[in-house]
Image 1: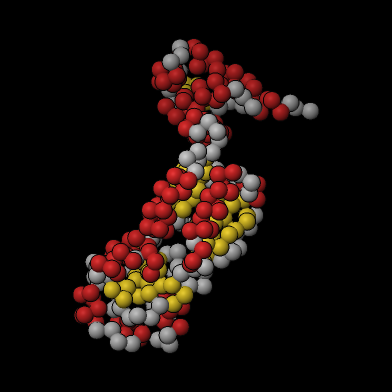
Image 2: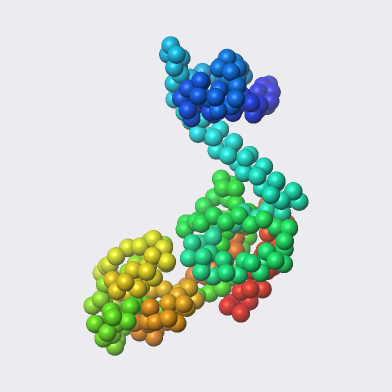
Length: 298
C-alpha cells in the first residue's frame, strides 16, 4: 500500500515548483526564493521523484510545463494561496476569531456595511473578511464560513436562517416619470424596462400581479442592483428595486416611484452556512447579532 506521505510533498518543494511554473524560469524562481539555481533544480527533481511524474520538459536552458504539470501548478498555486491566507488570518487574530463571509454586493455595501461597526465594537476579537458573490457556490470548494443569500431556502448541504423579506417598487428618474406620465401599470410597458440577470422574471411577476400583461417583456440587462439604480437615476429606464436598498435615492429625489405599487418578493434574504461550521464561534456571534438586527424586517 502506498504511503499517503508520498502525496504530501514539503512546502519547500512545492514553493520551488510553483515559482518556476509561474515565472517559467529556474533562474527567476531562484531569485524570488533567494536560493541558488542548483537548489531550485534539486527541489524540482526531488518533487518529480516523489510523485513519479515529470512536471517539466527540459529544453537546453529553459523549462516548459508538461500538460500534467500545468494542471498541478494551478492546483498547487490555489493550495499555497489558501495556506498564506490562513496564516495571515491567524497573525491578524491569534485567538482564531476570523469569519469569512460571502455577501451580495448591494446588500453588503448599502445595508450591511453601515451596521458592521456596531458588530465589531461588540466583538473586538473577531476579524471579518468579506467577499462579494452574486450566485450561489459550493462551500466544499470555497473557503467561506457563511454567506448572505437571496432566494429560496434550498441551498443543499447547508443550514439557513431567515434574515428579512423585501418589497420591490418600479423606480425611475423624475424626468422619465414626467415624460411618460405613468398612471396605470400597463403604462410602464411604454418605457424602457431595466432587468437584472439574477432576477430575469422580476418584471413578468410584477406586471402579472397588477394585470398588465407579462408577455414579451424586453429591455436592458444589468448584473447588480447598484448598477440598475444608477442607470435608472440617469433616466435610461424603469427598474424594479428593493425599497430598503434605495432609501437614500428616494429621500433625495434622485429616484421616484414610477407608480406606488410595491410587490413583496417571493424570495428572501438568508444567512447560510455549511453544517461543519455551525459551531464556529465567530459565526455564532455574527448570526445572533444579524438576527437581532433584522428582527423587525421578518
